[in-house]
Image 1 (cartoon, rainbow, N blue to C red):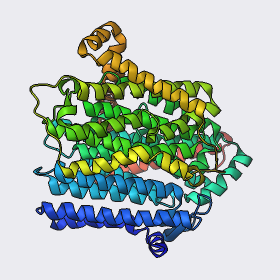
Image 2: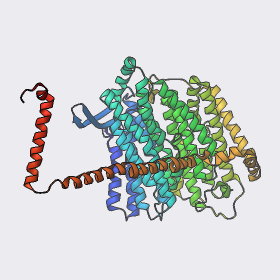
Image 3: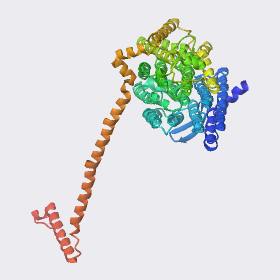
Image 4: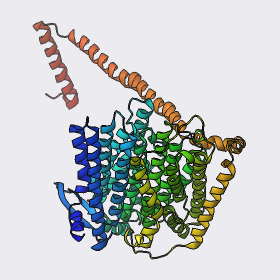
Amino acid sequence: MNLWADFSLHHAWLIPLLPALAFLVISFFFLKSPWLAARLAIAAMTASFALTLGMGWAVLSTGITVEAPFVMKTVWYSMPGLSVDMGVLVDPISATLLFVVTLITLMVLIYSVGYMAGDPGYCRFFAFISLFASSMLAMGLATNFLQMFIFWELVGLCSYLLIGFYFYKISAREAGKKAFMTTRIGDFGLLLGILLLQMMFGTLDFAALGLKVPAYVASHGTAALTGVAILIFMGPVAKSGQFPLHVWLPDAMEGPTPVSALIHAATMVVAGVYLIARSFGLFHVLPGAMTLIAWLGVFTALFAAFIALTQKEIKRILAFSTISQLGFMMLALGVGSLTASMFHLMTHAFFKALLFLGAGSILHAIHDQADIFKMGGLRKSMPATCIMMGIAVMAISGIPPFAGFFSKDEILVAAAHVSVPLYMLASLAAFLTAFYMARLFIVAFLGEPNPHNHPHESGLSMLFPMGVLAVLSVIGGWLPFSLGFGDWVRFGPAHHAGIDWAVAGASTVISLTGFALAWFIYGRGPRRSDALAAKSGLLYSLSFNKFFVDELYQWFNRNVIDGLGRLSFWIDLYVLGALVDGASRGTGAAGTELRHTQTGQMQQYAAVMLSATAILVLLLAVLTGSLVKGGQI
């Protein structure tokens, strides 16, 4: 075991390389060999997962910590004043991310063997998933901001390819473009922040910045650096679906359901959370930036949860649930608890991947009927999916002893220690989470069966990964908690506090109240919920229409951006164009007039020269005063 751990640690670069090679081999050789493409992608990810387990064991057994990471790097580019390294940084934070990414990706790939069967893009799908995972793994091992940014952008490219996987559908193409363009806004700010960091500190290395930033703040204050941190935070705002750049994430469901599971659970959306955690040495000394992160996080959690209350499509409900949970993770970072944020990142990956795979199992069984109010009674025809979806609902709602109970309560405790208003708002978001998840489960599984549906249980290739994730959704919280997750994955001194039973008890009561209210409204059919929706009026309309944020963006693009474009066109045509055309016509007219002075007659040229000479002599005499004084020139 120690030999394997040592090999995995010193060959951690193989973890992202193996799926990258799988992508290349499938793309060039196996695009017409579905069996080989799927098996190669799964084999590569299995090897990466095994290496990650070995690397994780090395982290635990050899004393690798956040303060003393294992680093291997080499100079990639060097010039006077600038040196850029490429390498591998292994510590408990990166080990956690790599464990989540390799595990969830492996489960998604196994699930996809059955789910994607018969799809004309089968091989292309496995190639893209391999590249996606490789990019995320390489980003997790980055030693500096520039290396991270390269793979950050590659993750964005892969998301565009996978969200728009069904490119023959207009909605899929538009969703892919929407994701790509929305994240460009945040990435522009991130790139500006990285450039400013290089200018201010002469390095982008995470370890070096961790040493230089506190000294800079002590001598120069926090004002300038806070602005840089906010620019960097723009990248996670877009990538991790924080308000107001969250609008791409609900449309990401246009890709195949396994893609939704991968994006929402383990890869793209947690990249922003990981970036903040990885660069926490920069953020933790900037109170202004931390306050912004905390309040934007809790607002996003509440905002998305309120929208999820009224959505009807199962994947759209889960998408807004993801946005809300990402808000919880950002809240934890904002109040200074990197441990709680990374803990929730890990547990959320388990139950959110299970929820999306369960949704895929349902859609696969009832021929893509996504409206939960047109499902009903699935507990009888899909008992295994029902049980596992129930486990995931309990986990995300924070019911003990499921995984979400431990990680969510860590966030609530951290928020309570910093700000009572933040804690109260986070608790309200937790209540809404329990309500809309119970609503989904009651309507889809416990309602009256729809006679137009003919559902059937999914096959083993789909149920097996769901079963693994269901087990992790049960034990994935208390097991790491009991083994001292906070002793390893942290920033600053370790906290050995146990469960805060006052907060845990209150949050459990809140979640159970949400369950009870959902049963009261939806447990006896849609009549009561329809009446409530009619009475809610404006509130229901705002929630169902997502507060009209997309429509607001469209209005802004149509009236402001397009208006500025039309104004620029008018200025270019009638102002700048008139100036250029006028100068051109003036030059031509002057040339025409001057052409008449060139007659070709020598006597005329001589007369002009003589006249000019006489004028010059006379002018010189006047200027020197010779004519006035009667002197000579």
